[in-house]
Each structure stands twice: as structure tokens, then as C-alpha cells.
Image 1 (cartoon, rainbow, N blue to C red):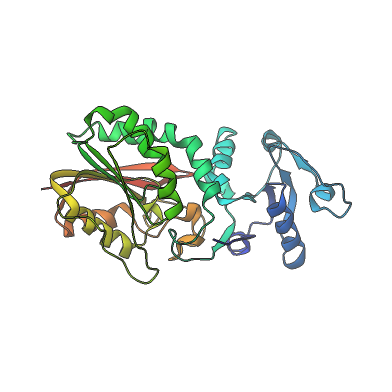
Image 2: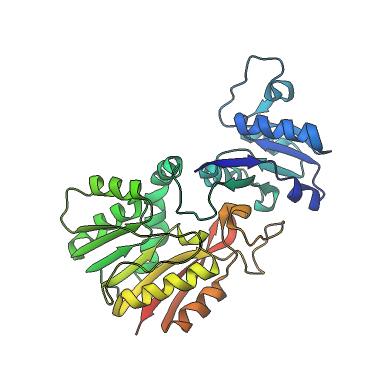
Length: 332
């Protein structure tokens, strides 16, 4: 999967942002500075980075402008901070800026183009998986477990969709392993499923499936009706369009047993209460944290249309306040 990073000129110009700092003094930051010099009145006041390394060449933009540690932002004035980093590092950098008291409205993410319009298609997910592993324990204990513990969920037959490399499954298995009869991991990424097979080779309760993904149409999951007592999806369906959410929530309804629960982590970007200080795009690649343009209200309506009871909806912060939502569904 090829990824191209571009300076967010449209966002800066639409908000009349002219004085910025660029967070990231590496290859992407250098590229952004070259783009600024070629086609914009925007002024880069300096580079910010946790690791200060400057190239030896006199023509290097970082060396010419200068680079400082993040805490230097406490003593300067600016319109915005533009992130010049790989997409998988954005949550970590935003956490750093939040700890410094930087408002989320002053943080602008880069414009990103993926080689595929479908998140699941293509290779090149290694960096994302590796970075996500480091935060998995906090996400499970801080978000997932407190929510699912509120409900009488049976963990006998679980589906993790899409599972990735099983980072969430590993933590849930440690907590609820004695209650689990079968734990099914399903993802469109074949490499991720092969990784899961090795990761969970110590247990016979795991099953593995590679689902078919077509960029132009939704494809039915290869599971029988009434197969699972609990289905969860975390940090994946946030990229799913309204159409895809509608289809897969319907599949959850079909494959859940009567009385079964679904935990769906999805975008809330379309809510009027989510302020991103820029245009909200129909294309997930153009939005903050690559969120799709749907809301909690959209998912509530979709779920009820498929016959689910919407038990709970909890808004959560993900770089931006209330950007995401956890919806808990119960099949009658």
C-alpha cells in the first residue's frame, strides 16, 4: 500500500492560518517545507520534534529553520501546528501536544493519499500494527472492558472483526479466557491472519478466517447464521463508510445468536458537535485520523433498521473530542 503525504494547504488557507510550527523534522517535514516555499504565503516558524537530528547539508530545510523540543511551544505564539509524520504516529504525537495543553483545534493533520480507497486492501500495514500493539493494553483496560462489563455478555463464542494481528484478542483472552469456547479472528489481510495463527498457536480455541473484500461491493461473511454470542470491532470500522457499516451490521445481526451482543467502535465525525476546523470529506483518507463521515445517530438508525436493540452509545475522544463512538447492540 503506497502512502503519499502532502502539506494541508486547503485547511490552512480556508482558516487563514499563516504562522505555523511543523511537528516532525524528518523526511515528511522536509518535504512540507519545500512545498511551503514553492506555493504558499504560509510561514513555518520552526520544526518541533522529540528527537532532534539535523542533516549535515547546508540546504537542508530543518537546519536552515531550526528544530526545538515540544516544550518550546509553551513560550511561543502560533496559529497552528501541522503534523509531518506517518499516520500511525499521529495519536502518539497528539497525546504529547495535549499534555502540553495544546488545544486540539490548533492541530492540523497532513493530507494523505492511500493507493487503495479501501482500508483493508493492500500491504504496508506493518508500522500501523506495531504502533497499535504498544497502545492495546491501555485501550482494552481503559475503554473496552469498562463498557462490556456493564452488560450480561456471553463470551462463549467470540468474533473479532476485523482482527488485525490480534492485539485486542490477546488482551481479552487473558481476561476472559476461562469463559471462551471458540474465539474467531477474521480479517481481509492474509498476512495479519497468518500472524494470528502463530500468535495464538498455544490455544486450540482460536479459529481463523480471511474474508473477501471488494473495493466496489460488500461481500457476505463466510459464517453460518447464529454462530456467535459476542462480536466486537475496535479501531477498524472507524474507517467504514455508511454503506459498509450498514452491510456489516446486518451481517452481525445474521451471525449473532439470539440475545447476543455486538461492540462496534465507529466514527462520529459527521456529528455537528465534532469540530475539526476544516471541511469534512466523504473520503475517509481526507479526514482526521481517517474517520468516515458517519455519526452515532447514523449507526443508531442503521442498527434499529436491522432489528437490533441499541443498548448503549458512548462517545470517546480520539485525538479530537467525541470523534468516535462505541455502540453496544443486542440481538433480540
